[in-house]
Amino acid sequence: MASAPACFCRRARFVLKNMNNKLIKIAIVGVGHWGKKLLKEFDKQAEVVWCCHRGSAESVKFLAENYPNIKTTTSLEDILNDSSVEAVVVATPTNTHFDIAQKVIMANKHLFLEKPGCSKPSELKQLCEETEKRKLIFAVGYEFVHHPVLKKIKELIKLEDIKGLCFEWHKWGTFEAPIVPHLLSHDISIIKSLGINSLKPKNYRGQKIISDVDIIEVEFENDKNIPITNYINRASTLKNKNITIIGADRSYIWNNDNLFKIEPGKQTYSSINMVKNSSLAEEIKDFLESIKGTKKLLCDGRFALDIWEVVGKIIN
Image (tube, rainbow, N blue to C red; front, top):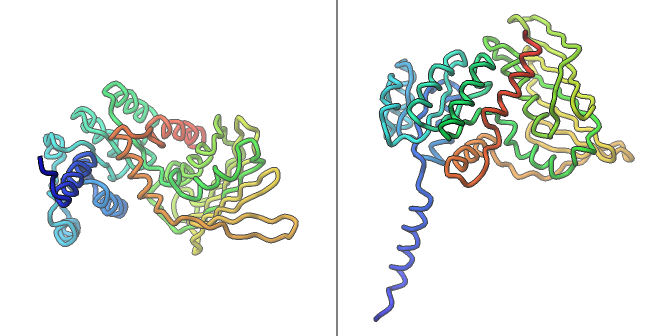
C-alpha cells in the first residue's frame, strides 16, 4: 500500500492536536473596567460564547465594536441554559457574587469569581462546599498569586530563610470598595503563597481621607514568627507597589513588575532579569488548565476563604 502524502500526514497531526487542545467555552458576566480586562485575556485563551451585562449603551457599543462574534445578553438565564458553556466568569460588584455564583453552580458550570469572592466568609464557605460536592473548579481572582516575580522569589529564597516582609502600596482609588477586603487581601494572598499561615492582625490603624478608610497600617503575627508590616495609601498621587523580602543571607525588593537583589556589603541593589509574563494571563491559564485536569488550581475557593477569615479579624 502506498504511503500517505506528507502534506496529508501534517494535516492529520494538526487536526489531532487541535482536537486535544479544544478551547473551553466561557461566558463572562459583567463587562465593567475589570470585566473588559478579563474578557480580553479569556478571548485569547478560550472561546468566549456569551457576555452578560446590564444593558448600558456603553456596554452594547463596546461589545459590538470589539467582539461582534460573541453573543450578548442581559439575562443570566441565557448563559445558564446554554449547555455548551463550561465555565462562567463573574466580574460584577462583589455584593452580587453570591447570588450569581449559586445559580452558576446549580447549572453545573465551573466558576471564576473576582476577589474577594463574596461579601461574607459564610457565603464563600457555602460556595466552596457546593463546588466540592459537584466536583466543579472554583477559582477566585487573586492576580498577584500568579505574578512571575512571586514565582521567581519562591525559587530564590526558601521559606525558612525569610526573616521579614514589608509591604508598601501607593495608588489612587478605588474609593467605593472597602480597602481591607479589596486591597489588603492582595497582600495577604502573597503572604499565604509564600507558605506563611495562621495570620493574626495586630496594631491595625486606619485613616479617613475620602472614604471611611483610605490609609491603613497593620502588622501580622504568623506561624513562622516572621515580622510582617503592611502599609496601603489609596489617596496617593504616586502609583507604586513595593515589597521587601528580608532574608538571612540575601534580601530582595519586588517593585511593581521588577525584582531587585539587595547587595548588603556594597550597599547597592542589582536588577534580576524577569520574564515579562502577564499575571492575569497566567491566572486565566491556571483556571483553564485546572478545568482540563492538567494541574491543581493555585487559588481556589478555600484559599480565598482563608484570606477572608483573616480580613474578618480586622473589619469585625
